[in-house]
Length: 120
Image (cartoon, rainbow, N blue to C red):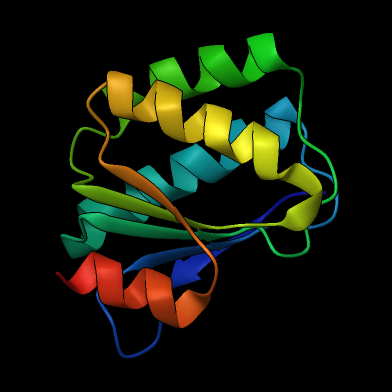
């Protein structure tokens, strides 16, 4: 099921709200929406809420996606991911790959924590 991508009200942050199951195609569509919103509104911070997420694509697809995302979303300064207990290990993998590709990324436990980190 596709993510919901919008601008977080009261903040200059692109918000991605993940559904229970996200496919590689869903992630690619979300990335394009993030790119468009960040370019149209001059936003350089992204918050991805994965608290409802139950599964992600396989490790190879995640690696490929994150590697290409670091090139496509060059405007993004910071990316906060609110952790899902069901996908915690996959999210740590995403964080590690993103950091090694120059995308300043952090896994956090709550939306308020993500907003605070993005505001630093």
